Structure formats: C-alpha cells, structure tokens
Length: 215
Figure 1 (spheres, one colour):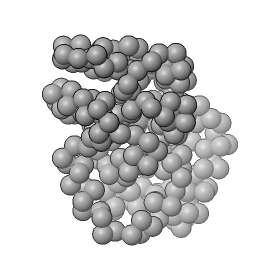
Figure 2: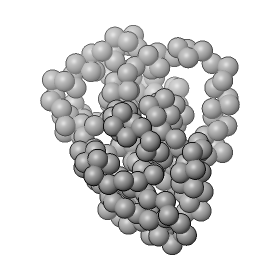
Figure 3: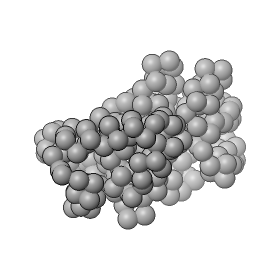
C-alpha cells in the first residue's frame, strides 16, 4: 500500500484528490496539509512514500518548500500538482527535487499513473510538458533575463506580471511590503527593465504565463 500525503490550500481539491486515490487500488491517503507550515509538520510526523504538492500555497514559495522537504526527507517522492503549465515552473521544480509534474487539469487516470510511477522511483511529466522540454534543449541556460532570477524573485515577478500589488504579494508570501519592494528592485535590475509595466510586457512577449494563470 502506497502512503500518500496531500498538500493543497483548497479543501475541494484535497477532497477530489483523496477520492481519486482511495478509489484506485493500492493507495492510502495518510494525511493532508493546507499551507507550507502545515506541510512541513505533516512530513515530519507522518511516514509516506509520495507527497502531492501544490506549487502555490500561502506562505513559502513552492520551489523553496520542495528544497526544504528534500533536505528533511530525501526519500520522500514529490509529485507537483499545479495550475501552472509553463515549462519554467517545471524546470525549477525538478531542479529543487521534485520527481513529477502534473497540471490540475489532468484526468484522474493520469494522476493515478503519475503517483504510481513516482512511488516506484521513476520520474513523471505529462506529454505536453515533455514536448516543451524537448523544444528547449537547444536554448542556452542563461538565454533570457528571467532565467537569472532566483526562485523567490521569479515568484514575485510572476505575481507582479499578474497584476498583484506589493501589499497583496506581501500577504500571500507572509513577508513585509518592504521585502517585496526589495525583490521588485532586484528583479528590475536583473532583467534590465525600467519599471513594472515593462515586466508585464516582457512576460506577455515571452509567453511565460497563461492568460488564465492563477496565483
């Protein structure tokens, strides 16, 4: 029996994931968490083979959370389940230690297949995402300015480009507005753009985020 943990800030999503896994043979949902803090507490207290992890929960940046989890529980396999279908998110998640990347629009059968493969020690990525990876193989790692951003800076950049205010970002990430302003300044410097509007144009020009991207 594969023990699975679910970390997502939406109760309905957790209910749906639990229902899918419990109706498939060989899985047991051993625990659930709704934010970064409770996720860390859960992995420390509850033995499991696989963690289903939402990339955009309140508090810590999802990629940073993956890194901490792998430091504390290197044997725990992480399957990212997110709204973000962009390659940039997947690359950062895998580099941080994730073993799989699946979007929330995926069918239940694909979720079961992904958890099964990750639990067995494999790596799972959807066909669409695999095609994106293949197309990017010939691109230099530092080809674009946004690829020079740290994981937290990239998260702030994404939120700024989506139209969130400094205050909203600070609340979502549980940091001060001053800290977010500092990140914003670094982002503008690293990407060599003069103002926030240029960040939005950059994101649109390079098609970094879906039109319906949810933060």
